[in-house]
Image (tube, rainbow, N blue to C red; front, side, top):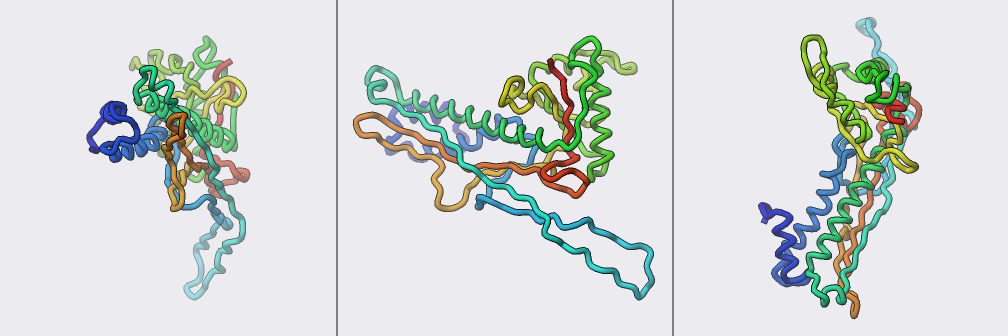
Length: 304
């Protein structure tokens, strides 16, 4: 069963309907797929830590800056570092998607694959919601920012300098080793600016390949840009990816049913996907403001 493709699952279910007695395992497989696929096709989940948790709210105590005294006398003992009460929290909030497959539609020739395709539409919408949520949180969590030399891809642009300057800021201010891999999230319409080949020294390669080679940078492209409510706006985000920078959480504790398929008498079939999710920017006592991190840097104005 684990080797079945999504098309196999959909086709078997579509042949007999969502309540067919032989399809219960396939139906559960589809439900699991829906939860996982939303994360797989999301850009945000590739650059932050992702965890399923049994709680809806959690608090981290940050304490105070630690100290280590050296040198000291052989018989000396230092005072303990006080933990303090400084803290930050994350709260998971509820989201839902729902579709209905009407009896009238089925009687006019549609198969049960229709509702499955509606389910996949909800999967994609959930992925877009996750992306917007994570990327909005990351953009808001950048403690420092700088304007691009010019719009990326324009004649006067200097993408390499803008990105390397942002790297310098991160390594100068964040509590990092200095050799961590980096991630750059760009508006998708700036992909060509990073893929155009040019001469670097005696090597002809794209900007993306060049920065991957010299700076261990991976570039991700997001469609969540431009107008009001879009996470990136006209900007880009450079960051140290991973769970130490930020985390995205989904709830999987007891007493909660994520998917529900029910019969509406005289109407049709109703499918509901519910979920609790949230994200957090981890604080590292690196001088950044509350809720922000020097592991994140915003490059503004990369597009007009």
